[in-house]
Amino acid sequence: MDINPARISVENLNFYYGNKQALKNINLNIFEKKVTAIIGPSGCGKSTFIRLLNRMNDLVPGGRVEGSILLDGSDINAPEADVVDIRRRVGMVFQKPNPFAKSISQNISYGLELEGSRKKDFIERKIEESLKKAALWEEVKDRLDESALGLSGGQQQRLCIARCLAVEPEVILFDEPCASLDPISTKKIEELILELKKDYTIIIVTHNMQQAARVSDYTAFMYLGELVEFGHTEKVFTVPKEKRTEEYLSGKFG
Amino acid sequence: MSRLKEKIYRWLFTALAFSSLLFLVGIMAVLFKEGLPVFKEVSPANFIFGKSWYPTYSVPEFGILPLILASLWVTAGAVAVSVPLGIGSALYIHELAGKKQKAVLKPLIEMLAAIPSIVFGFFGMVVVAPFLQKVFAIPTGLCGLTASVVLGIMAIPTVSSLADDALGFVPRSFKEASYALGANRWQTLYKVVIPAAGSGISTAIILGMSRIVGETMTVLMVSGGAAVMPSSFLQPMRPLTSTIAAEMGEAAMGGTHYHALFAIGLVLFLITLVFNVAAEVISRRYRIKLGLNR
Image (cartoon, rainbow over all chains, first blue to last red; front, side, top):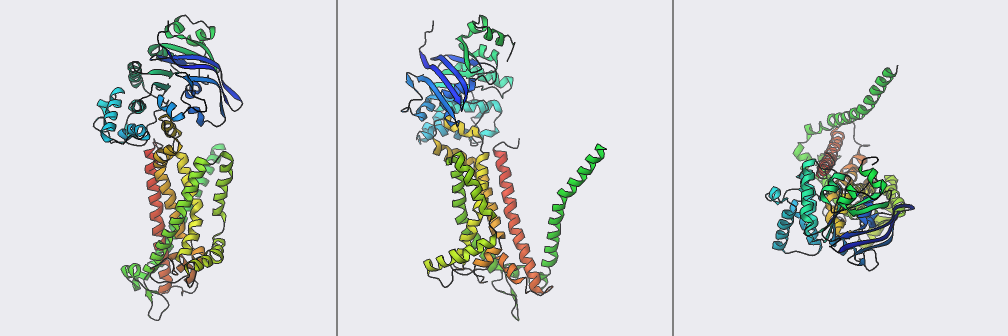
């Protein structure tokens, strides 16, 4: 049934903020070149979960992880794991578009320069390539040197996607990428996600159940820090196994 | 009844808010009224660019260029002290210090600002001046350099605290974006946080400078007081503020000397005004740049 291999395997994952347990014994596989949606009401731990996959929660004081997250078989929280390498392999697009207060091209070259790329033609090629992949090139090609903050919200979010693509990740995490965007920009981002899954493994956290149904192959429903149900999107949406999933999807709570 | 109360409060607070404006206007009026008459005796160009300040000679001379230059030299020297120390401590507090260290360090640094300036003056006279006198083998330790060092220390809390605020204003999302692209802490600090806080940090420096330029008591005590054109940091100097403080007591009220001292006050006021406006303009541009004003 699952033809693609698992890229990320999450096993018995618990996460604590100080004494408060935010994630309870999560077990889940993320499959190669598929879109996995994580849905659930606010505060259910879906953002916490996705931020563990590239170790963004390292920045949270008092955060503690138990269990394992295997990326291609090796634990990303192991002492010998290189957090920089993990974050380059697992890119992230955030809830609110967060381009740097730099020019459009500098936003993209930033990640490349971090790894020591200085060759101008390589960087220029990468800028064009990433912007094209993020479906933004046509709109910005004549103003690459202008501030990224002059772009619209939707454009900024696509720039953030381009910035992420430039460092050639294998997995891309989207943390409610459309939460602050209008419907037209949202549609563009959704089309982009469907396009990107040809090359990347994608995980998207979303509030919006319709969005999950539109873009994902797999859906995970989380509630109060637990993974309630995980499966093929059409199954989760049409014949959910769990009563709580059904109730959430039909709008009984949320 | 409650509407009347509301009206009264409204009026009261409006009056309070505008009273400081009133003081500002009043002080400026006095400065102009008492300062401008000097230009009946001395032309503005000779006043500003004149190289000799001999207000009490039988043929008095009122050229304040040596005083202006002394102020600028001492300020520049103090900036060279306060900026690395102030910004360095802000970076440490913001980026490296743990919660506990931060809770101790920040108030401690700000406490430097609570020390009366006369105490700083003592410290300069008793500690810094003899030390520099020995090190550089100069006739007196009361010189431009001593003033710079002491004023620089005095400005550290202003610079440090404002620079720390500026670093804190950098949206967390900038840092997260940088980390998510595989940047480490230093790369994030140098390439994202400091540039984004750049104008806020410049504001901190400028406001530190305006504190230095306006400082009087300390300067009076440690700068040496010689109203000659400065040519070295190791010579005694007499900045604008200490001139007013030292001479106001002996200047005959209504005389040219008296008016000249007010005119010096006017010049000082203009200098700090320029600093403050510059700081305001820069910080406003910075808020817009970060999208905080939208």
